[in-house]
Image (cartoon, rainbow, N blue to C red; front, side):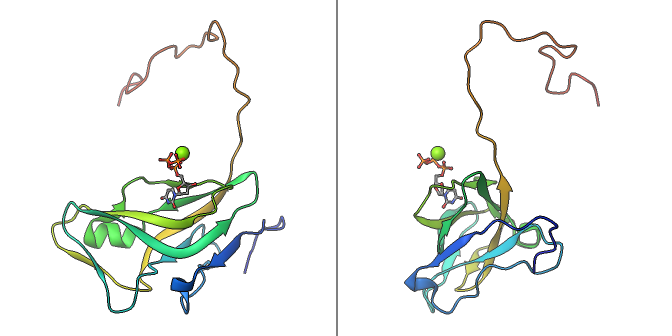
Length: 156
Ligand SMILES: O=c1ccn([C@H]2C[C@H](O)[C@@H](COP(=O)(O)OP(=O)(O)OP(=O)(O)O)O2)c(=O)[nH]1
Ligand SMILES: [Mg+2]
């Protein structure tokens, strides 16, 4: 259930045949920012990620994201802490006009094999507003106190 004061934007989820029977992503608590994504692997054919290996894991859903929004795919902290499993391209970006299956790019940064089974919650998705910039090429960039200082220029 949404606790937002403004109406929640609609996120369409198109279930693909290999997601048959899997729970829809859902907010697990009233204030959750993300919804967990499940591995839509065939039953009985788990995927093993060896240390250092990466794999694209299917979620079994096509998203219909409203224009003006994106979906970010982020790691789950429990898997990262316990198993060294994270999303290689975090945060993954799902464009509002993408109509392919959403997949999760997992990498095993741990020291043990990690076995992914059907229905396992492998990552989370956060829907967020995006602003498309009006890009203009300029001749000079306006002066600021920071100038070109960065990468630790303000000290520790
Ligand atoms: O974790 C991810 C990241 C991306 N995508 C899908 C949706 C996204 O809209 C599309 C393109 O992603 P991105 O722009 O990050 O990849 P790219 O390498 O720039 O590919 P493209 O040239 O297709 O944009 O791939 C996923 O399913 N999972
Ligand atoms: Mg791209």
